[in-house]
Length: 77
Image (cartoon, rainbow, N blue to C red; front, top):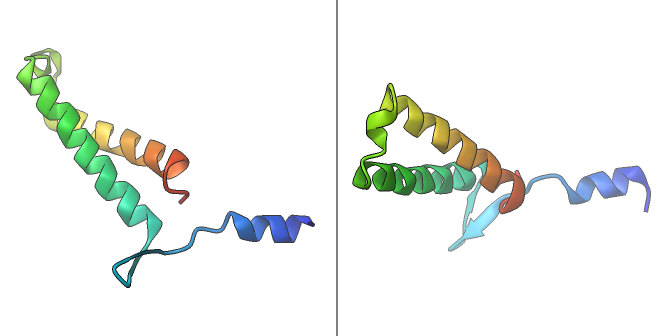
C-alpha cells in the first residue's frame, strides 16, 4: 500500500444515523458540548465554579477541549 492509498483511509467521511448523513465534526461538537455541560453541572453542584473568574468562558473552553479530544480519539474528524 502506497502513501496515497493510506491517506484515503484517514479522510473523514460522513456518519449515517437513520439514513441521514452528518459531518463528523458536528457529532464531535455536539458530544463535546454535552460533556462540557455535564462537567459544568458537576462543578456547580460541588461549588467549584466560585473559584473561576468567568464561568461561561470556562464552559466554552471545556467544550472546545472535549470536542478536540472526542474528534481525535472517538470520531475521526
